[in-house]
Image 1 (tube, one colour):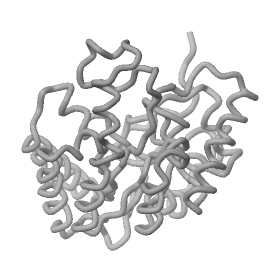
Image 2 (cartoon, rainbow, N blue to C red):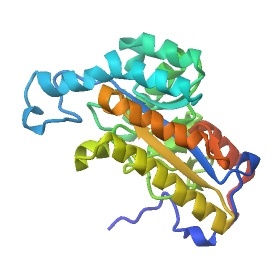
Image 3 (tube, rainbow, N blue to C red):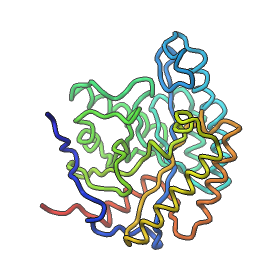
Image 4 (cartoon, rainbow, N blue to C red):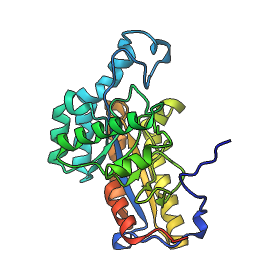
Length: 292
């Protein structure tokens, strides 16, 4: 049996205090998934009954709505609320949707490596094969965006046992795949940390659980309120991520509820509206790993 050696168990009640800029209780970022999908592979589907058809016009078209229409609606909403995105970027987006890259560069978005395409999970590679693959992903994103990625989230939150160390070789400093905490923490890979991401405060959960736009707004409010209270009681900051997909939240009937949620957050006096890059940099600068 293989134990997880990537990180050690650390109960949140037994850690040094974390402080955020301005004394904020909660550091908030939006993880905006901008992805490319292959027309002959199954992926995230709204109707699984068609997912194995080739071509699958129903599900592929639904996903494709995100880069054709939904992303632009999402961009407008983020602009209105003055929020920069932390973009989880498939490197293939650079070739297929350069207009989106330009929009993000104009807005100084943070860019994270998110594999090449979300039609293929990041798994099953030998060490040298994975090193070459990750190098290509990172260099493609750096060239297209003008900014070398600092963070990683695998397609479908996938890694191999070698991924964090290979990312560190390439100069990356954090991963989002391990959604097991409300605070960043150091991995057992020198220079690498985990930054909180979420599979629950995630617009895909609306589909899985049959929830509505108003449910999303309420979830965001409840998540923030609880994390703020936790932080104040403990005297130690928390991280709140909101995961978005333009083919979900970018739908017309959901978009206004994203706006309502962001309006609520930006009016909170003890929130740091930031990016995952800035969270990682602040944590690594001010909270060094303990020496064994």
